[in-house]
Length: 572
Image (cartoon, rainbow, N blue to C red; front, top):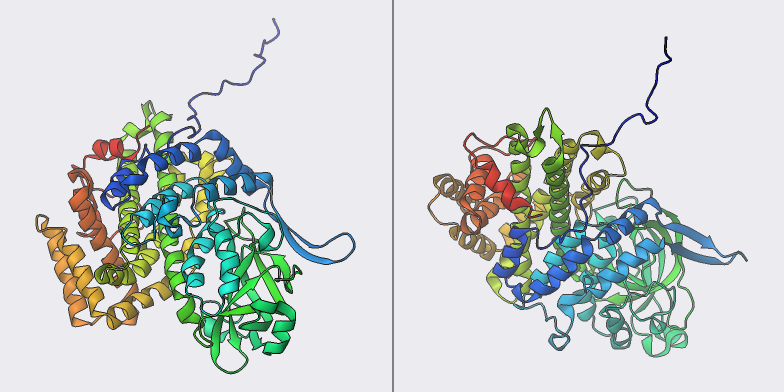
């Protein structure tokens, strides 16, 4: 009997999808391109196409993976035992940040028109940045945190009165398109980033319960220490439970005024004007579920110096403009991650064979993918419409609309994210669940935008407050919904019920989540009915308005043109 001859190789690898890379993330997305042109950002189309190509490259996708594998590290002391509180990052992080700061993700809408951007008033610059931010969300979400906070800090800092020397020194560095990660006093840097520190252990979202205390420094002492920058200096003692991006050059924080005025806002630099380190002690970095490439810290202020922004006791009013911009970015960020998850799922399904047929050609899988595509496009068009409100903030109607749509959108779109990511991961099966696949990282990122900058309940209560305080908000919302027309009977009936609820004012706190959901779905439907192909808008209305959106995807009715929806969803 002859010995059994076994092959040297156990198997051949086949029926595996190629990596989703080296694809232009902008030009493969018709819905985003259309929204950019429609909402006033068309002048940026060429720049967005160039950015989409860069962000979709295998090179940058590899950097995103590396930045997550090799997360930030805290070094509290130097070798001699001196306190330094430095956070170090892998070169991949710095490589990503350099690309994105150069692209203006941190400041473009605030740059003077002469520099080629705009002032943020009807110029399309917020729309252009919003599109870019959605693109970045498809690459790496940790880098979005410092970009967002720096972006959102500018309107607050520009309104600071009584601090001309500080703002003259800081604003040009914040608006700079050069990324400079060095730990140095700001005057020695080419660019600067801003972080924030609001919440404490005992309060979280309830910042009025903060115990960190800020005591005004007597003017003669402040002048002896800081010379021309002595105005409004406070000495601060306390802690922050979440101190975002501790390596930032300065932070905006909330603390109680020791004089009894109440919660106030302060500008807290890492380095003081004399070049010494401020007394900000980083206790540890947070071990987070997601956003792992980015550093978040617990800190203590051991007599740190900060400069009062706005009036004493008006900290929340001072910071509110910053919060509105960070919440916009939560909507954009979630829309970006959802788009990335859809792209990964659809790219895989177009190449993977199962039971003798390509996955994307199987009817039930088409139902799931098309349903995901509807959700992603609806999130994109809503986010871009909201960005136009920020461009047209001098229009009272647009400003009023933003006051409702910002918290409503942050609630609903961010809340839809985790389920969306789980469904997209399921398309890939087991390979989607492992860390080598981007979907695992995307899935871990999706919950944070619901939590950060106000949880779901806080957002829904903000919706109620906006509607109660501003009749103009209800009028603006009605005008926006009227643009959806009267051709679709389901939409017309839904719109009528929603407007009746708003007119009667009978929505209470217990039902606030349902109201926020209804507002966003109605606006999304109106936008899709106006601007999307009929196959998209009719399927969205049938599955989001005619019935409550379900907890799972793949519930589209018989007769839905899934092939047309999927052909539009991703142009490869």
